Amino acid sequence: MSQVFPGEVFAQTTDFDAGIRQLLPNYDQMLAAVARCVPANSRRILELGCGTGELSHKILDRCPAAEVIALDYSPRMIEFARTKINQAGYQRWSGIEADFGEWANNPEKFDVGTEFDACVSSLAIHHLSDEMKAKLFQRIGKSLKSGGCFWNADPILPESPVLAEIYKAVGEEWTKNQGTTIQEVRSRLASNSDSVDYATSYGYSSQDQLATLDAQLQMLMEAGFNTVAVPWKCYGLAVFGGIV
Image (cartoon, rainbow, N blue to C red; front, side):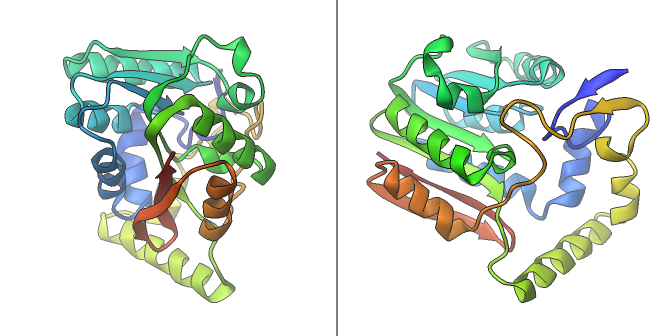
């Protein structure tokens, strides 16, 4: 029985790319917004939680001369991403099996380095507690060059119960418009599968620990980011970050 970690939404890795597009409204547009906000001349880029490599792929399409270093605690995700990136013809990608929460607390344990032009993440940081989010943002800020940027694509805590219902309805309508149902997609989730050993927590990550967008922008300002911004938002999903 294979081990599945928090953030690995589906029991089978091969279901992830199609399944996440059925669940999340405008998923590709969201990742494209992250990639667009990374300067095309970036040379060193750090990715936190590579997943299946979809964001890495979009980043390298925009920054083909860049080196991408990705931290992810899931060996199956790293391998899936590496295969995808290699098949796309990109060679300057490396996946490191590591908990980026541990990197935030003890960076000296990891041969990651600093002086990154950019740091990116998608659908990963919301698994950290708010305390760890703040620590991670501080570590990211210290790992960027002056003028470097950080962009994160993540679900956010709805601003009110009324908006929570709206965001939920939008998600269900999106899934229906993809020709399926929430129930069918959920049947493939790791948390509902008997074929995998699903861990509800691992390292510093656990089930969704959403924070409001305002709270996270405040964390970024307190971490020393000179500019904070929200270049893209779609109901309960947002791309946010800043420049140091």
